[in-house]
Image (cartoon, rainbow, N blue to C red; front, side):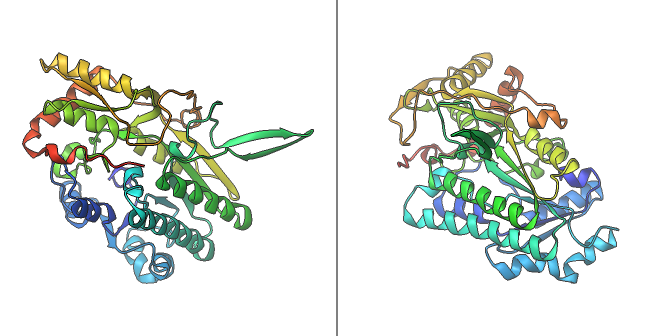
Length: 377
């Protein structure tokens, strides 16, 4: 919708992996969201703009290639005076949850198969059939882990025995999910080195929020909002917990520090990266965050928002189900996106109050039993 509203011809390809996973694992959604086809119809009715939806599995190599080499797939785009080949592919087709990947060997295997196969199929399809297409891939700040040195934007210059070379910044993912994202980066770096592909890798931190300018047109256009431990990001979880008087579940000491960004900036970052694409033979990496917080700081912000609405919000430190450092150095660089024009939306008290009010308005949909089940690794 963000790109469509700005005059782009947009095709969305999906197989409902996440929706099916939410159904299978019985996770909670804050509110119902229509499927992609119905949302595209609604978008067209409200704006007159068309988004084409194709349902299919990108781990199927021939299906992925068909998106690039079958003329029938371009009839719609050509009728809108587009190029026959996509100028940009935004690769969001990965299983997005660390807890999901650590539930057991089955879900770890599904994560590896989905993420690596989809990326590999896309890379080869672009190489063989559309080599000028710019790939924007969603990475994760979790690829870096929590090293005891500053985190640069994707690359590190190493001096060793009097010689110097630039390498991909050392990665140390904390879950199978994060490890697959590292492998995806390595796959695309291979494609860049060998075939001169053009790739932007956005190392995204946890996203909060569910509202964009486009979704304000109709509440049915909002994105999925999970509040469970599997698919819900931490600030979204805390907001929902506060809305139903559920103690904020802080893992361990709560000193874990991460980089965060508003969902509006997720879209803004992708758009700015599209406007200024990577060069041929370039793997360009941006750290896609706008500010950093510890778990304790986010819990305190949620508690403060509750107090502003006359709600007492309790914080509970529980045994950490994850293998992670709870007190660590964390200093990532994230200047690159600002340099190409991103203007961040910072986490304000006003946002926290608004988000909590929205969660309260949906409190009848919230299920306490799905918030925390204790997935360990």
